[in-house]
Image (tube, rainbow, N blue to C red; front, side, top):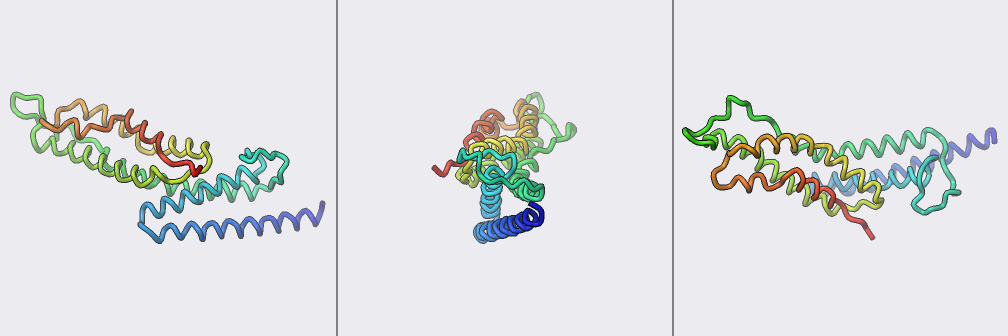
Length: 213
């Protein structure tokens, strides 16, 4: 009540900020290792913890412990701080998947020339599409292998991230694949370039992340 309530709120805010700063410090330790995956682990660490804090202490959280009478922080600063931190780290994390879109650019129609009396593209035109498919395949395999074993504690967060990762590049890839997989751009190795159908990519993304238990 009154001044005591204000003092308690200030004290709680102080504790939460100390906790957040401690988490940020621990997250930085991950970035000391390999660059991209280190930053991914750092962001994942922060997302796991802020998602947990929001559920366990926020006014509308769903406690995974099942104790709905536990203490809740009703102040708006808590929700704003934790949500902004979570969204910021999620944005950083999803940014690593953005690289896949660089391979999904269109090939202009006037760049597509066919061999005489044939339905297959000329060597130079075929290379334009080959380089896009091969670049995408290589980067997807690398990123997927690095990220598939990242630990995501809450199954709701795991499901959210799988969907948001797909949203970063899968719609673009689906349009690209549907358009260019129908064109014969390689005599002998077309299936190797087009081995990842959008459906296969979606299946793999549903296998992202591990449960620590």
